[in-house]
Length: 519
Image: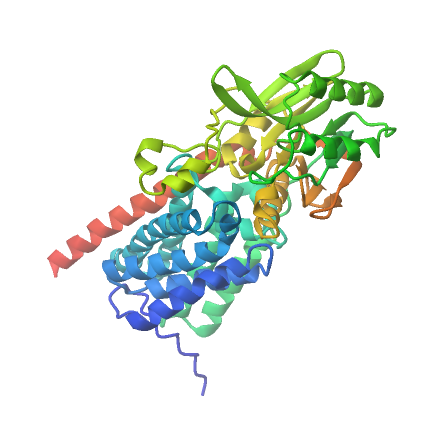
C-alpha cells in the first residue's frame, strides 16, 4: 500500500498551535543568530543563511504578538552581536551593544508582522495557493520590507546585514543584477518560507511538496547571469600603503601618505591611466598643505596619470570626507564629498541628546563630517568613474546615482584600519563583489590596510592584495555601460515588495476578521 510522508507538525491553516513551545522557540531563536552569521564572511558558508532563516521563521509560526516580539528580538540580538562584533575594535562594547540592540528591536517588530502573516493569510485565503504560495510571498515581502527600512532609517540606516549580502560567493549571486540586494533577500526568504509551508500542507502528496520546493529553487537558479558587454578597459594602479590609518593610531601627520608614496614608487614606471589611493590616504590635505600638493604633483607628472586620493577637506568651519581627482599642474580637477557620513563614527547626530548617555564615548568623536552634495562621478580623461568612500558601497542609491551619471567603472576607496583583524573588511569586500555584479561594473576596492581587490563586472577577482601588507595592483580593468534591471528599476521593485507585503497583510487581516464575525 502506498503511504505519503506525513507533514512536519506545523499547521499551515493559521489556526493551529505553534510547532515549538515558547521556551524552545527562545532557544532556537538565540541559536539562529550565529547560524545566520555563519553564512556571511569571514566564515562564508552561505547555505547556513538559509538554515538560519528557516529557524527564525519556525519560531514565529503560531506565536502570539508578544511571543513573536520576544523571539524576534532574541534572534536579532544574537545575530547582530556576532555579525558586527567588529564594532568593538573601534569604540568598544557600548556602541556595539547599542547598535545590536537597536537593530534587534527592528528585527522583533518585523517578526510580529511575519507572525501576523502566518496567522491571517492562510485564514483569508484557505486554498492551497493561499496557504502555500501567498503566505510564503507575504512573509518574504515583510522580512524584506524590514530590511529595507533599517537600511535607510534612522540616520541614514544600517544596510550591513541584509540576507543577500551572504551570497557573494554563491550560485544565487548573479540574481542581484536582475532584482538588486533587496530582491535577492526576498527570493531567499521566499524559498525558505515556501519549503516550510509545503512541508506543513497535509492535503498535498509528499512527491508534490518535495517536487514543488525543488522546482522553485531550480527556477531561481536557472535565471541566466545578466549579459554584460565590456567596452574597452582602463589601466589602473591601486596602492595599499598599509599605513597607521586608524583613528587612534599614534602616528605623525603625513605618515599614512608617506606609506602610500613609498608603495607608489615601486610601480612608478608602470604605464597606467590612473592611480587610485584609499580613503584618507592623503592625510595631509593637498588642498591646504603645499608639501602634500607638491608630492602628488611629482608623482602624477612622473607617471603621466591623474591620481584619485582620499583626504579630509576643510572648508570654513566644515569638514568633509573627500575623494580628490588630482592632476599634475592642475591640482584638484574634481571632488566628491561623502554624502552619508557614518553616524556615531564620522559625526554624532543629535549630539546634545545622546551625549549624556555616554559622554566619554561621544566626546571621542570631535570632528563632525558634513554630508556632501556633489555628484559621485569623476571624468578621468574621458572615462567616467563612480566614486565610493567606505560604507558608501553598501548604499543602493549611491551606486544607482553613479551608473545613472554614466560611470563605467567604480573606484571604492576605504579605510579598514580601525577594525583590525575582524570580519569587517571581508564583509565589505563581499558587498563590493555583489555591487560589481549588480551594476555590471568593475569595482576597484582599495583599502589602506586591505583586503584590496579589483573585481570584474561578473564578480570575478582580477587582482588582490592581502590584508595588512603593503602592495599594489596594476591591471587592465574592464569598462562597461550596460544598465542592469536592478540599476534601472531596483528602487521601484523594492517599493513593490514592501507595498505588496504590507497591503496583503492588511487585506488578509481584514478578511480574517470578517470571517470570524461570520462564524
